[in-house]
Length: 261
Image (cartoon, rainbow, N blue to C red; front, side, top):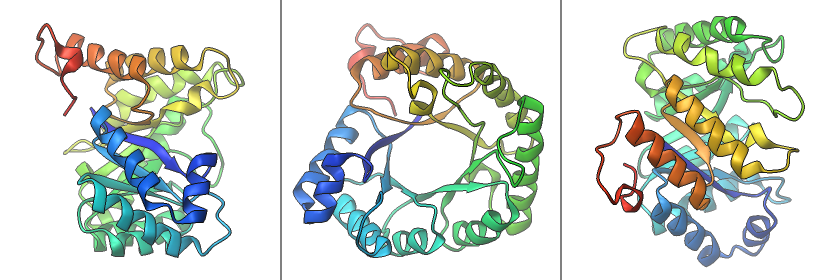
């Protein structure tokens, strides 16, 4: 399971404060703690900064990669900010994210190819959020075809079936889950499947329980990556247990103490 830590995001007050003050020690500590908890990659999002977001992204990349050696997921709606982060990266990177909209694909696919990066692609397009699993698969096919045309290997593509809040659109949970097997059948090599896990519990009580239950259900359907909070110990325990039960990890009596690779 490819775990992308979500905590270095300027939407969190503590991170926004660290960005404003250029508190490298605070960002580095948050990076180290997420990696120690099991993150294989770290998502970097400048949030609604009042500064130049491209400069902030460059600073975040430099600060984090001086503290840890993991893949960096560069998260911004602005291609120029993504490009600034890619230029600062010394190691592997993932672009977070494009959609199936032609304008977004035209802007971000060339960057993924140029910088040898992965690409997270949300299965929405100009028409908005798809209503069911079949519509999600249709958009996913378009994304895969465009990636292949651009020269991006499909095993560097992370398709997101769009997880929506259960408190608002309860019926969309099964549609996202049912889309996963169809995504995996689209091409060879298979794309990765990723979700932004915390979306499913937005606006609901018992967020932790909802998150870990949905995660294990999605893993059973074929999910192999997630943007989540690795500092949530119960969530990570559920992830590791599901990995054992799905025969993705070798069982041992102390498997909860073994960091997921």
